[in-house]
Each structure stands twice: as structure tokens, then as C-alpha cells.
Image (cartoon, rainbow, N blue to C red; front, side, top):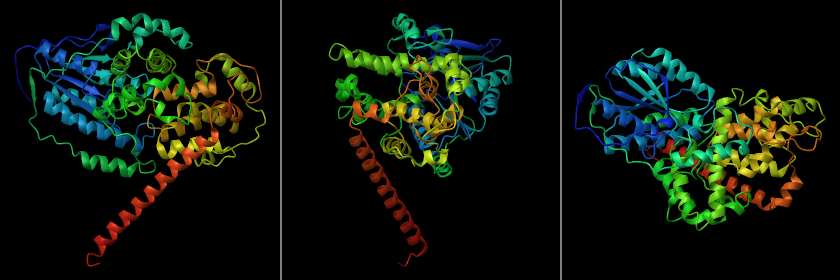
Length: 499
């Protein structure tokens, strides 16, 4: 690898509160490597901005490396296909607009990332922030494996107010964290500078070509049990279209009724549709907040409700997963909730279903079945239904531990935004009362908030929602059958070219 120095850049630095030093190196001179994983975008990315700024200060080149885990918490074709197609677009943008190389490595990141850092002689490794314990453990291992000469920085480019700035402890509820976040918003909810091309170019001595088509085909085959969905196009260009598009953008066309209609499953277009893009980091929550804030004078209630969900609720979920190591276990529930759940664990259930029955939507509740089918086939269950869905799993399984395990398994397997702090937080809220309060005691639920079919009927048109799901599932099944017949016909023609 050779380097070519250029004049220094005027690129501004990142607010120091957004950066943490995980490992202090000796200050040797060498390239900067940005290990990207949670924030998969070029624009509005504080981690990338920091990496380029540090490279320009030291007059060294910078590269982006992404590790494709062979297995990550059960991700299937639905998730990996969306992610990789977004990364393919990002790779092209990085190389052509910024001349920053993108390296894709495969395996365990503890090995691949530390090896990459070692072989290129990097002096600084920049990483994204994730509160999930698998990633935290992985970063700790990388810090152990890289040379003592290497510095490691962690940048929170996912939250508007960095996790460790918002709070230094596990927060009890949205009420306890909201004020802390709001006090810091003026410091952190600021516009982004443009990322300029690095001044020193990374020259690759060996041929480095990523066969995106082959890699994507591999993950689609291996994860075909949960196929892709076509309602959300991957990549940050598509993400901005969902946010700001002239045809059907959330802020440009659908924001007006957000506060009144977002909890009505019969009005799915009232939701933003941004969750897959936020989960994979293909759009910045901060960009969404900045653009929404411009419209507050026109739609104050809608904007305030959206910002509450986008900032306070999302960052509360990160807080929970970061400071509570048992974020996906009944051990992570508050003491009152654990006690009440265990006190009622042996209560008699009217129905007890297996995981297989639940996965196939074989219950006596047509509303629950519809929500499950929506998730399995569409890859997204309406937010209100996710609460009802999870609480019925508690009611229909042999105990809270089994209920939580099944809830997380199904959520992570089928939801486009599975394996996310907000998903774990949602399951824990529904089943274990996390960030909630105790309610009137009743069988099975104890003091955990209760939801039932009759309550749903009072809030929205249940029959209309069921009919809506049956329609979209029917259309998806028909399309799948047509595609299967088309593939069989292609195979037949290949085998019988004279036909």
C-alpha cells in the first residue's frame, strides 16, 4: 500500500462527547480504518466524518471495512439481502464520490477486523456504537488482539444524543430519560458537514473486487426460509425517498395524521416506514429529526409525537440494552415484575400453544393470527399489534421465560428490524413490564399491563385489519407461486432447449 499526500482539509471535527476511546495506542503514524457495522451510510455519518478528519489530521489514508458475520442472531435472506444490497450501493458511492475503498471481509469480526488492522498497519480503528452484548464483547476482543500501538475510538452515530452522554445509568422509564436527552439536544441536534474526499489516497496493491452478485446470491439461498420482501427498497437513496420523497414521503405527504392515526392498524400508511432503514443505519435518526423539526410550525403535534418516538423511545431502548446485560431475559425485568410473573407462572391457561403453532398462526384468535401472518409474509407488523401479539404469547405459553424466548425468536426471524434494541425493549415491555408500571393484578399477567381482543375492538376496526392482512398475504402468496412456476419453466427450457 502506497500513499500520496495532499494539502490538509478544512473538514470540521465531531463533537468530542460523541467519541469514546476504547483503547489508547502509542500515537504511531499509520492509516485510519473505519469498521462499519451499525451505521451503513455515507451521508450524515459521524463515525465516517471522524475517521476522515483523523486521517487528514495525520496525513494518512482511510478505508472502510465491513465484516459479514457467517451467522448473526438468526438473520435470514430477508435481512441479509436488504443489508448487502444497501452496502453494494454504499461501496459504489464511497469509491466514486470520496475515493475511499470499501473492504468486505467474512467470518468472526474478532479475527477479520483485527487481522485487517494489523496487515494495513493502521494507527486508528474507528467503530460504530452498539449496545448489544455480542458486539460489545467483540470490540473488547478486538482491543485485546490489535497492537498496543493502535488506538480504538467508538463513535455513537446512531443516536441523536450519544448513549453515554444522555445517561450514565439504566433508566427506569421514558419519563426519567426524556429530560436528560432534551437538555443535551441543543449540543447534538446540529446539522452535518459534508464528508470531503480524504487528502491522502489509499492505493490498493492487490486486486480487490467484491463479487456482490455472488455474495448476495449465497445469502439468499442459505437464508431462503425467510425470503425477501419488496415493499422496502434497500439503500440510503431509497431511505431518503421514504423520508422526503415527492410522491409518498413521510414528512412531505404523510406526516399530518401521524399523531392521530399511528396506533390504528387499519391505517398502516400513517406510520413512517423508516424502521428498516434506521435499523440498518441506512438513514440517520438525526437527519430525520432535523428535517421533521423544520415542519413543527405546520404540524406541531405530529412532529412532537414523531420526535418522541424517534429520539426518546429509541434512545431509551439503547440505554436499556447497554446498561442491562439481561436485556432479553426475565432477569432483566424490574423486581416487581419478576415477582408478579413468577407468582402467576403456574396459573391455568385457557390455551397453551407450541412455538410451531404460534409460528404458523394456528391459534383460536383470528386477530392474533393476522398479526403473525403480517409479520411472516410482509416482514413488518403494525406497532400497536406488536404489543397485543407479544402479550397474547405470554397468555398462551407455559410461563414468562418461554413466552419471552418465543417472542424474541419470532421477532428476530421475521421482522425487517429484528435483532434491534427497540425490538428487545418492545418484547420486554410487553411481557416483563420494562419501562412500564404495575397494573391491577389478574391471572397469568399478575400486575403486567393486560391487553385483549375486546379492547382492540374498541380502538380500531378489527375485521377490517384482518381483511387487510388476508388480502396482502394472499397477493404475496400468489406472486410467490407465480415466481416458482416461472423458475420451473426456466429450468425446463434449459433442460429441453428444443421445446
